[in-house]
Amino acid sequence: MSKLRSKDLTPLLLGEAFQLFCQGVSESGPYWEHVLSYWRASLESPDKILFMKYEDMKKQPKVELKKLAAFLGTPFTLEEVEKGVVEEIVRLCSFENLSKLEVNKKGVERFGKLAEVEKRDFFRKGEIGDWRNYLSKEMKDRIDGIFDEKLRGSGLVLTSRD
Image (cartoon, rainbow, N blue to C red; front, top):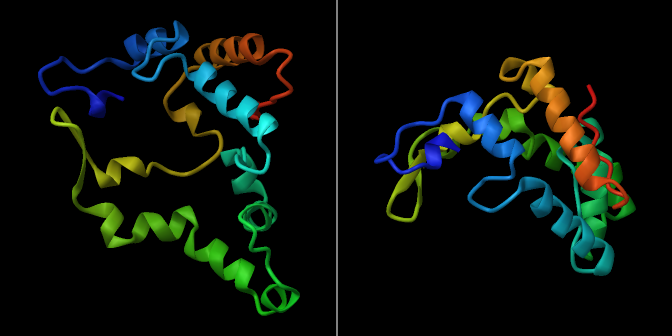
């Protein structure tokens, strides 16, 4: 988020950004409300909104891709499955492949007149559990506690418990 801040503002330190996040302060409002709104919308209109989780896509990419294709009304045929089309799409859309493409390594994305982010900044490691490189165990536990409280009763379970 610091990269999206106006260059006129001082950069946020991680501790400051963490506190703001835990208080629900962000450009688009509390993150958990953002997630819950899409979750609820997916329950109300399952034919229009497919709710997918990054962790599920990383753990079972072929299963999730098939689910996405079916949702879009273009399920894979038996012939496509047998020819390895699913595996090839997973390979082409993999973090490893996309992060190496020149179009994703150079240039900038502009967000209005105040902020621009280098495209390479959208790619970190693409690993589940990468929080360990940025947050302490106490910080992770605090976020997990907030999400447990905010998502309670919704039926949504986030699997960041690694």
